[in-house]
Amino acid sequence: MNELIVILDFGSQYTQLIARRLRELNVYCEIYPFNKFPQRDDTKAVILSGSPFSVLDENALDFDLDKIVGVYPVLGVCYGAQLIAHKLGGKVLKSDKREYGKAIMTVTEPDRIFEEVEPATQVWMSHGDSITKVPEGFEIIARTSDIVAAYRSSDNMYTYPVYCFQFHPEVTHSLQGKEILYNFIHEIAGCKCEWTPASMIHETVERLKNELGNEHVLMGLSGGVDSTVAACLIHRAIGDRLHCVFIDNGLLRKNEFEDVLSSYKGMGLNIKGVNAADLFLDGLSGVNDPEEKRKVIGRLFIEVFEEESHHLPEVKWLGQGTIYPDVIESVSVHGPSVTIKSHHNVGGLPDKLKLKLVEPLRMLFKDEVRKVGKELGVPPHLLNRHPFPGPGLGIRVLGEVTREKVRLCQEADKIYTDNLSKSGWYEKVWQAGTILLPVQSVGVMGDERTYEYAVALRCVNSLDGMTAEWSHLPYELLATISSEIINQVKGINRVVYDISTKPPATIEWE
Image 1: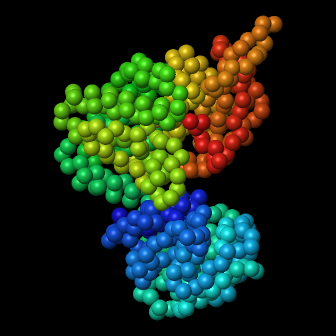
Image 2 (image 1 turned 60 degrees about the vertical axis):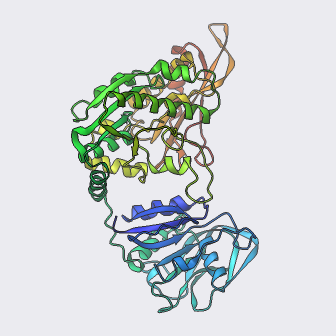
């Protein structure tokens, strides 16, 4: 990477949105904890995120501004703007009420940061403190009716300018926020904005060649877009020194093991199918906690890979299709944000892992992975498959996983996805899945009482998996799916539809 924007995370719910917007503008960025600033030669600018905390708190999240002010172009957003004001001699006071929602910002001083931006434009506010005085040598460049909305360092005060926004340009409710961010990265930071799928591929392949040298890689494939694109990148870098394995963990969709192996034919990938269903299902016996299930599945995946590696003594690396949302949600490496859930391929890997990890997609969002896959020529039937969790039905069968529960979930899920495909809705939504609930309810079929399981149907629209809206499937389609599941899958007598958004709910239930 020759152009990097560093985003320092102070725990804001919007931090990932900053990264999303910058990448949409074709500039590469990475999120780092506020207390782990990276010393990198390719850094072009630094952005300080918002935070749920106050700079006035006794234990406020602090940062040594001398590391960045005057060294790089700097943008402080919300908490970042308040921190800069507070530490450089300005004044920040607690507001009588929290300012949250839409506001009209008026540009009071012309500036490059507002090029092509309307003199009065809607912005999004979310803060409990207000900047009442900017530091000496700084000037206010925009206001709302009530507060300082934007200020900056005066010309020639520092080698590189400092900009501060009380509003959130990364949120879509800031109608011209994307233009403002573009002005910062292009006009202020001097980024060329040339980070494209083609450039991603070139940079990644060159990095993999250097990282892997002449060594061999064992790669786990799932049939999903992440592992497929990761394998194609590694294959482009090292050719036939890539050895692919597709494991049947007993938690796949109905007929998926055979279908996936067939779908990879003609792609040049050296792939072997391994049936380990009994190993996984036995290992999950008696396990109810979702985090523990993920760790069991992660451990067993690695054990199978290690066993396969014994037949390939030349293998030194384990390839994985880990993507950025997996990392963000699994491990609190991005500042004070909390761990949401462990992913089987992140954070749950045992210390005894004997193979080194290679993860070519680790810093990409899902939509970026698809763009890279399209550029690589990955077949559409693989590229456009809905995301499927690594732990598979192990986290869609809530509570203890048994062979019978997996069968029920598989049968219901097959009916669900088949109907989505037939109706044309499969291509219109981002992800769909069936969840077997750990409850039974009373029903009646043919004048007989039933006491059987309920399933929940989940269907969402999303770009990157970080946020998601529930899909508004037609009632008639839902009615057809419900009727077929109840009539054809003995053991299920109730179907419900999940209308939760992410956040606060995750896409998967466990």
